[in-house]
Image (cartoon, rainbow over all chains, first blue to last red; front, side, top):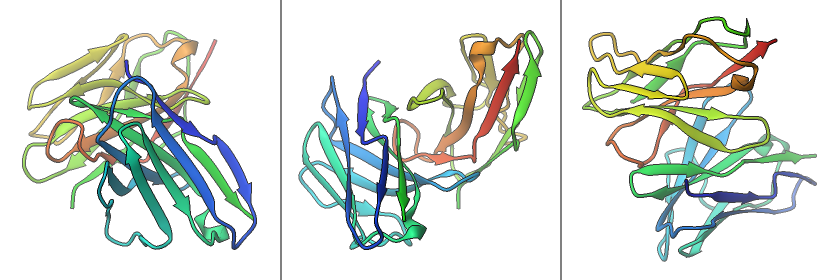
Length: 113
Length: 113
C-alpha cells in the first residue's frame, strides 16, 4: 500500500515557540491531506483538510492562525503550531488520500513545557 | 452531527480467545464504515471496511458487518494472537470513500500468550 511519512515522531518544545510537523506521501501524489489531533483516551478529531495549492479548510473551533497548514506540493503538507502552549500538547496525525483510501502517518507526539 | 462510539478499553485476552470490540455510529445518509489498527510506533492502517448495509468486511481473520438496523459495526475475530495486540479504531466517512473520517476513541487490545 501507499506510504505516508510523518516527521518528527516526538517533539518537546518550550511554551511560546513554534513547531513544524511534516507529512509526506512517499510513493504517490496527494492533492488532499488531512490533519487530526488526538487527546488522551479520546477520538482522533479532524482539524483541517489540506488542499495542494490552495488554502486549508479548517473544522469548526480550530484556530487557523494558531495551526498553520501549508500544502505546497503534491507530496508534502506541513502543520505549524504557532506560539505553542501546554494545552497544545497532543498527538497529531496526518493522512493522505490515494484513490478511495486514506493512508496515515505514524503520528507526532507534541509536548509543550 | 456524525459520531462513533467504541467499546472502552483496555481489553486484555489470552491467545486463541474470541474477540469482539463493539462499535456503534450515528450518521445521516449512508456512510462508509471502517476499522483501522495502529501497531506500536506505526501509523493507522486500514483493517477492513464496508460501504453499504449488510456488507461484511474481512481481513487477517477479522470481520465486521455493517448493520444499519442497529447502527453497528462490531469487530470480531475467532482466535486472537499475540501479534494482534494494538489499538483499534472504528470510523465512518459521511460521504463514503476516503474523505474526512469520524473516529471512535480507540480500543487498546493486549493479547497475552
